[in-house]
Image 1 (cartoon, rainbow, N blue to C red):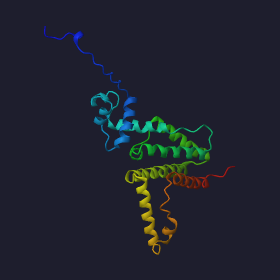
Image 2 (image 1 turned 45 degrees about the vertical axis):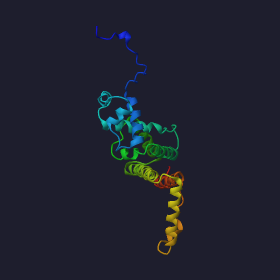
Image 3 (image 1 turned 30 degrees about the vertical axis):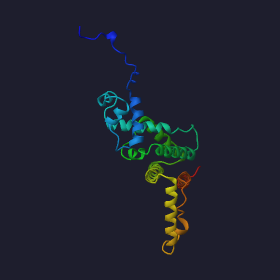
Image 4 (image 1 turned 90 degrees about the vertical axis):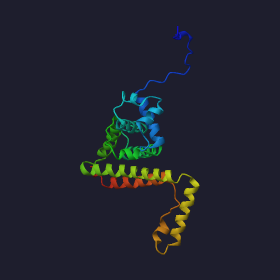
Length: 230
């Protein structure tokens, strides 16, 4: 008898691998994108993170691009929807402040948002809320579209630039030293750049305060274009 009996084999004490699901795949994809960015994302790396075979992923998702769409929609769930009946400025401020925070936690989001339509159910719920706030304030037609573009472009542009800055200048002490050098340079050349030397305030590094003040300025401009209340 050459075949070893089942009952004589050592049992495998390793816990069984969790079953794959679309939810597990998307959660792992978000984590992989956080770690590696879009350029470092692949189905092979995703499968390795899940301790699964690459082909096993395709029983739950159609392609790499599908996974990216699902991951992008999933992070919108981190942005709370406002309470019904909230004032339009409060709705937009909360949505954009939270959107920036989400893009800071997930630096890959601005890149994906710029390259694909936001048609996932969570993203569309936020877009509905955004458009409804501006439409309820009285904007319609091209004015409404322009207001949406101005607000979203401001938030995305600010977040993308901040992400690049934070990825490049990581240490706070290095950032402070660089800002001091730039301010010193402007001061030395104040005869050429008097306005910059006096007002640029290069050493001001409050990204949160700067974002929220800039957002108020954009909202003030939109409010000035609203039709009069009758």
